[in-house]
Length: 420
Image (cartoon, rainbow, N blue to C red; front, side):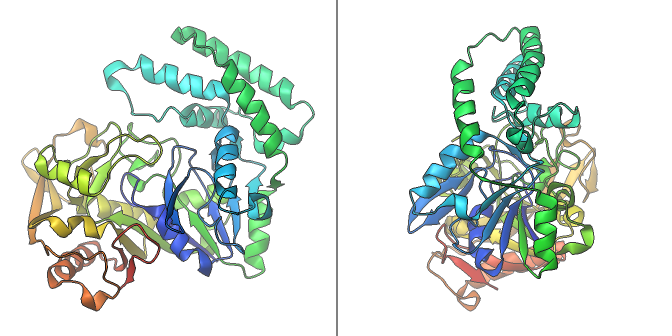
């Protein structure tokens, strides 16, 4: 049996903490897509740690953590992250497994990412410059190197061949930065990776499922950044929705049971691209300040706005969401009035569907107003103790989406999570 936990907005919904909370109920936590552009923030013994590639179940001693074939893996980032985890007394070699079909991010992928983004000028996608896009391009172009290739004695030859191809592309961009230090780090990290448990991921996970083990598939980024269904072209390079679990881990659709969607009580976005409910005023700045809305991976300030139920309903539909975890509800404690987007005004018509390409239309969001609760909810432990105005806000969201909010996160710590 496989449950899926993923983001329903533009990423940064607080998935790391939620995976960490649910992890004890599962035998395996598996990452199925994305790369080191994903920052999952956890608090361990009151200390903050951000995981970029290692699954968020790593701090649970008896939980297997699998990096699936749908991920693109940066060996340098993985090694640094491994050392951070080790500082907490966790031996990653014990319960961290990597699928041999997982594609590698090379130093030249990072260079290509930077060169491509620089060439776009004012039309930048907002890439994190981690090499994710170029790595996925090599995957679909059937050129990429995979983790299993590390065990091949001809790996260096394969690397040089691909590097020469990349160099020709870099020359066409006029990119001439020295990346020799990146390469030195890369080959040191490659030696480290060879010491990890490299497995045939699809057989590995299906054998565990057949033996009765419970799997939680951990998504990265968010549904509105999905390469097919997100706000194209301002999207990531992988399938972030639940369908990506099948191709990213090698499990059949009928093995998937619950799809747990994570959404903030408001909305944020990092980087470029359409954002219908974005606030460019003092309210948006207050959301950013109170919510500490700065990227876990990049440190970039996040764009902030009210919750968008049109986009959220779309995300629930394409994912088959069965339950929702609402995060950062406590950020709204200080607001006297709240707004919820219930439809889009497009060319004088009211729409409740997400357009084919959001960046090609002008959207006027229609809002329903709610009274704020003006109460500190961060210390509350029971649903019954929540202020009535907060319950009204959440009940409306439940009714609109047709999916229930089952958990409410009211702070960053592990124990700040209320079961409804």
